[in-house]
Image 1: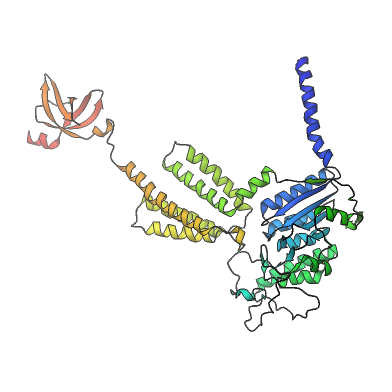
Image 2 (image 1 turned 180 degrees about the vertical axis):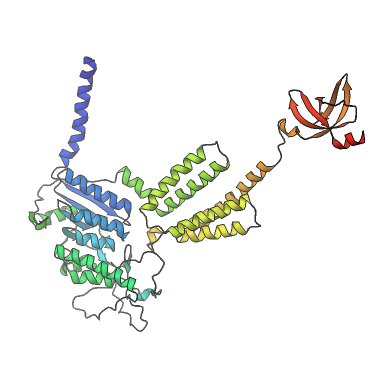
Length: 493
């Protein structure tokens, strides 16, 4: 025992040192955390946990490397709450050149303690995308050239088209036409949206971003325009108008400009000291990568259908095991993904109704009525499943059509053939002989012989049998058949 303890102690010391060294090395470092592509549950999880780990490691600051077209409102607000509650400075940095902080990215940039951009980047287009139905009551589809004007009034003249410089069209949590912003350019008041729901959504978004602008001392007037008019700005103009604090060509240049800069951090003054500071890149771990995969709407949709089909096949043919286990796992993963995605429960209900109708067609053929109705319900439910208009959160139409065709083939035809085969009379083994009729072909002493399935069988009967008697098989007892004279033959005799 003593020798075993002596061997384990060095191993435990090495393990503890290995766990402690990364945190010790990260103390006082700059942590770089990516916010890339569409913002969703996986992006929010990666950023929030990265910020928490940086604070636990006593990092000097966190720099968010932003390049996003926007994303889900719920995920964005969770990220902003984490930034506002941070005990270390959070710097939002739109990078590399050509990147953007559109829609949700604009809100995150406004929430950061310091907002910075690389040259040839842009931010803005922060008009909220309506959730729920394809359009809210009173909202009509407009010409693309008029998307920057939220007013449904046809008499309202569209604003002049912006020049190509400093404008970019973006979609995300928010959408809207990007408009060149100029402080010297006169602009007419933008009419309020037509419906009460639209006004509520827009006003809530305006109040939210203005609150962030006031907290960080940035341009609140332009922030309101970014929401109401969907305008955007290039980096240089954003710096001139007080929308961002710095324009830096690289992370190193950003750190050099931050050195000695003062900000307010949790109500106290904080001065950056970035001379000879180390940089620690926080990679996407397996949890965030896995969450990113399963919260992809197309992947979640496939997992749900695989789960449903697996359970159907397991229930139709119990005892196999693999379809049931695989189906249960996939269905649970899909349900987890759907609870963090903007899902329409009406669409989910239509999908299950469609699968149920196609399954019913296999059990009780109805000349295609149930099957066709099931396919229609399945397709319509799949189309409206995602309760958002964000392009990155829509089910691909080829995937819907493919699964609809697959479902029709599998549930109606294949499952129907299996069920019909199970209802057919058994033609293998001895049990199929029960009830079969035969004729006594020969007598060997007191034992009668009948020919059944091309073979001679010895038979037993409670009544005497003669050659050519018609008998019916009642039971199988080893090599003997228990038979009984048929009623017609008894009446004749």
